[in-house]
Image (cartoon, rainbow, N blue to C red; front, side):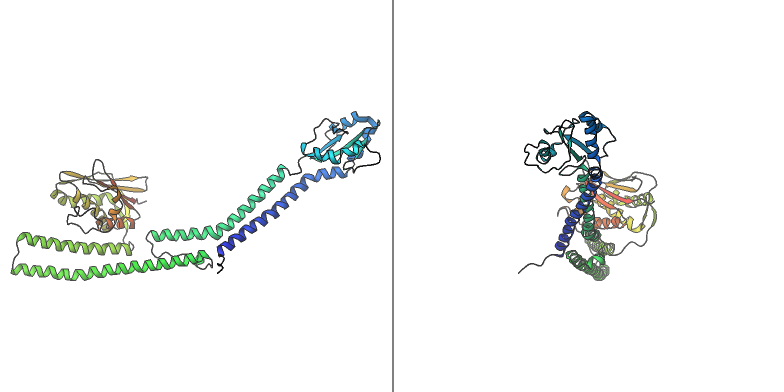
Length: 450
């Protein structure tokens, strides 16, 4: 079976063929134009009375007079070189014949000057001058700036013609291939950035070639991804709501059972703690799902330094319980445009994570500063066990655990994932790096309010 020719292949072949044809035509036109311009004075001189004038000067004054006449600037027009050659090929004015003309002159010009055979007269391609003493000279006019293989001007014209053709064809190829690929690349980046409603432009989808097929396949893939994400988010919401109802009933049943048959204090506390952990996990799932599916709607000017100070004050009790000191560096007034409650939850998740892993009698440092007048950088650093370098990016993924031993039974495994969604929703980002001499440093970048 013969494979079907690609439309892109045919279009590319058409462009290349048009480029070759255009270059040939434009090159020939350039050569004709340049050659005609350069040969204009030469043709005028050749068809004029210059040869007769030279013959008259030679007849009246001999070779010395002709030599003086040849050296007069007004004798010849621009672009024309005059050679008066004897039988040996020597110029009467002492000029050297260009090497590229020597063989031509030897074969077709000097033969008539020498005239060795009185029964044979070779074809004369140049007028013949005869001095009073019978000496014969060939009157040879040559174009000064052009050679048999061309001239610098002709070569420049060819290069310019090639550049014009290349520029036109490159523009056509860029329009036919580069622009659609760039548009599709932008849509792919938008989809990768979380904008799952992004689709290829209609003009690209309507194309009948492989790029159009690629755009249609991309749209189908994006639609499938959007459906999968929507179904996953709906499933998470449904599961969270379905779990909260039996959880509430379970809490009520435990309270009623506690009234009838009180449990030991330790067992009661453990049951309540596990129920609270389940409730927190369900809330975190709902919060993460909402961040992935709903855009921010409540954003206004917010003093970030005041928010961080309030957060440190609120979390100081938990830190004191763990014998951890919270150190907030004062960086002055910092303002952002944000959802106050959502932004606080993002910083709260990061700070609580640092307090949880910080060893007793250590400090968690919170530092904020303005960088490049456009970006606010907040760092939260602890002196805990730290994170392996290969896990620095993965800790922001949902339910990431460093190891089974690292699970202290607290948290839902979604704290840092929620924090990343929060900061990305505000146009920022969050990264982790290893602190020195030990611990973990979280860097949060947010756009400063203008």
